[in-house]
Image (tube, rainbow, N blue to C red; front, side, top):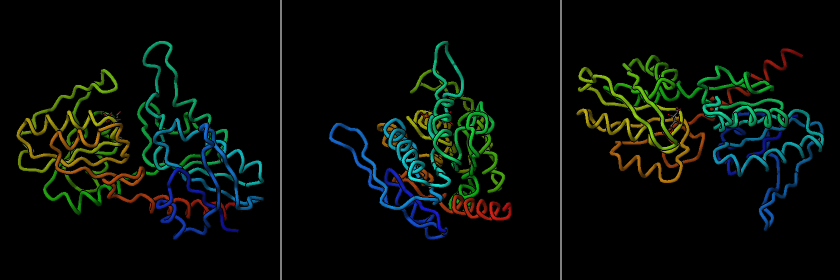
Length: 301
Ligand code: R5P
């Protein structure tokens, strides 16, 4: 029996690329807000003994989490077999440590919530810094996919005579991988964050790279301050205006406009969060993973 796919929060175009390649059919679910802001939910599709997959990218998580958990709870109650979650951008990963006394470890609480309602989860490049794997906080099977291969492909196609720059220590994991795959040099900068919108970045000596085009790579662009500061330093040191390449186009407030105003040449992101800068498709990575998951499951039977 084909599984039922439910795209939530306008994940329709993402879901279309998945359903065209998977033995899944689009499920029917009515979701709307009551006038007071509460959520109304009604499954039109019959769920009894059906495997269900929800697709929900979780930027702006506070407004999405309650409807998402209600949808999963309803599906379970209506007889769904396994309920999976494809979450192209997984939020609440950055508070991975109690930095100051009394702070909430929201990464853990969020992981517990999703683990209580779903049977498995697939995501793309979650912000793994102090955690090495999602298993440290999620109690359900999780799969982490990486945008490094399609990013490296983009660099190979568009980044003639370039070098890559990671703005901070955390970025080394994906920048080094993209550099390796695209066969280009890379450097990593040093960043100290002193507030939500305050970062200090130190640039090493870049004389050796003056003849190359800079491409900054990061996992998330949130306030944009990291890439703005890095861009200003690169331009200030005589390098060409950089291209900014990122996985998740979170863009809090006016971050995108501010990044453009800082003088970047171009901003390119993956389609984990819909944005006009999306140029790198990660739906194929997810499709492949689901196909392989089903093959493994059949072999195990
Ligand atoms: C750092 O922890 C992340 O890899 C990104 O550098 C960070 O999330 C970017 O945030 P913002 O755009 O707010 O500087």
